[in-house]
Length: 298
Image 1 (cartoon, rainbow, N blue to C red):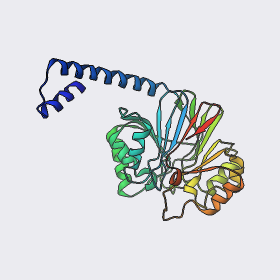
Image 2: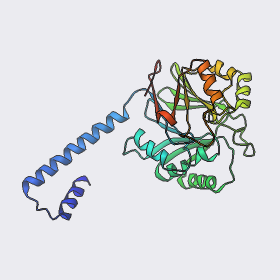
Image 3: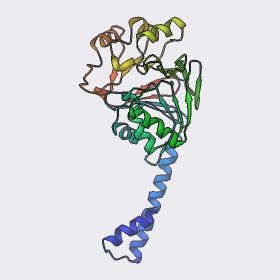
Image 4: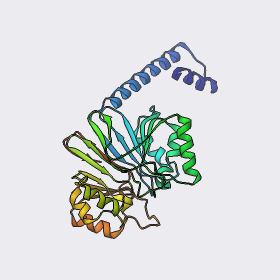
């Protein structure tokens, strides 16, 4: 296909072909093929866990690549092409499938970008909390899931999702799958674990669910905290932060967003606990790499 494309391009420009030019074109195609093959091998055999908090504006989108190459996308940000742009940077250009898509809850700034993802990528499994949204965009999301014939699972407290290579997601919430719950009360919250490292992925969890998890003993120390609700003052209480005791905090928010996220109170609390804060509105996409013992951040 690549050789044919070169010939078509040359013929379109009415360039004469002789034996020497054909030889060089053929060699060029072989070199390209060899480079492509080695790129694919290197990309597919990387060791370790990669977690990228994508710069998609005012919303959430997290791309995870497990040590064995399995890929997970948690949320897709608002309706725009931003998540597709960032995925094109995080994934090999030839890769058109994502193993698992997880939706933390049915608000537009979390599911909106997933419609474009479902249209472009093959999805094997979708997981969500079971909450619903009555707007037309969410109906489109559910219709696309049916068209893709992706398996669909409702997440529930106590589940463990094996991502491969030793990495797994420990589902902390929801306790029940109820489409009549408000999206925030039915939030999907998970802890990503690989070896000695962990990431607490909170979606838009607010202080009522924080208190529930604290009371149940489900909250333990995590290396990276995805700050709840884009840094809203309704999340990340002192008691919660003290129990998580993160090494890094990540805030996913859009630059100069109309909500004023992240709120000063939350930034002050993080500063009080001496937690370095990384923000997508200031730092762009934030990428962590874990070998199971230590975490590096880019």
